[in-house]
Length: 114
Image (cartoon, rainbow, N blue to C red; front, side, top):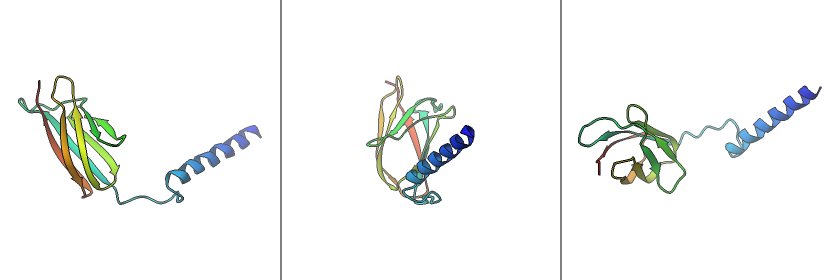
């Protein structure tokens, strides 16, 4: 009996979290978002850079580049953003006024060593 009550409570809590995250409609999917992705390479050698920090300034959105130098932000609201790219031993790069309007926005980023 305790397991049944606990299971019902867990299901109820999960439904409440889902309901709150979708602003009142647990089945609603926001199709108005865009993706920003890209590839980060060394400017001199052309080699891809792994573990580069990529941030959308003014938000909590941040990701790291993968083994192929690729990164991706998903479910971003359309708009204009500054993208900050930081990596050890390389100059910080800020891409100003990146307009994310289409469903997928691809960037090529070249970082220069100090």
